[in-house]
Length: 296
Image 1: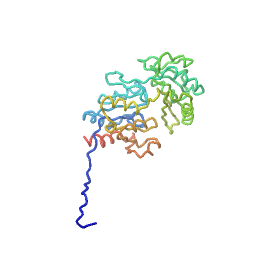
Image 2: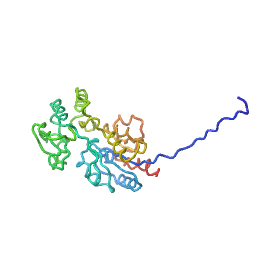
Image 3: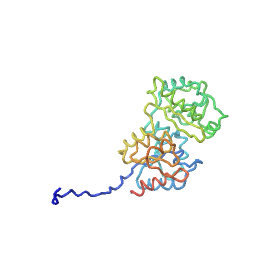
């Protein structure tokens, strides 16, 4: 090379972080600590984000009325994406997005899973009575009993369960041990009409407890988050999402900035996404302070 040859000058430029416009937060294992309490630091960080002009959405597997007591603990209004993406409920109680499971699909799912009936239920988008339907309440199972006690005003029994399908439900739900629910999820995905519905799995291995939700085809936390963001003119790169469980994967994939909780399931911790503190150490607040407030 000639000594007179001039090489191009390459400058190392640090680009400013992309401003976050929407923060999507799972509830159980993420926003709430391991004793289902809301850390004060999380409340403060959410208030600061909303005050900075950022929309906050709770994106949860809980149905709306089960999520509502948590929403009411927050110091600012938030959007609720509930039932693993089946509904979007706004602070004014309107529901701009609703993805219901067709009655006949729900019926076929129940008929194909008769041996799991003890842990099966149906969720409807109703004001209160009959919102949650079981064939028979299993009072001997601690987790099932606890759920019914926490939702007593919403739960009814209908035998057989198929008789409750007088309108399209939000979902058919199952719960049980982790291995049992993994087997159920595999069976559902192998059904001839498996494309007619979506299967969402949430696992708590330490408690040997798992939830399997059957939803409308294509319905996930991530799909509905993207749909809602699109209506708001918010692109993927403007979204921060925080989650800890298997049903959060699509939500995290839908965000330009996915963040995994320190207490997350191994499958999420192995993704290489940034990891924040655990839910017991207000990891939500840490992530908001790092990715939202420090960049505003």
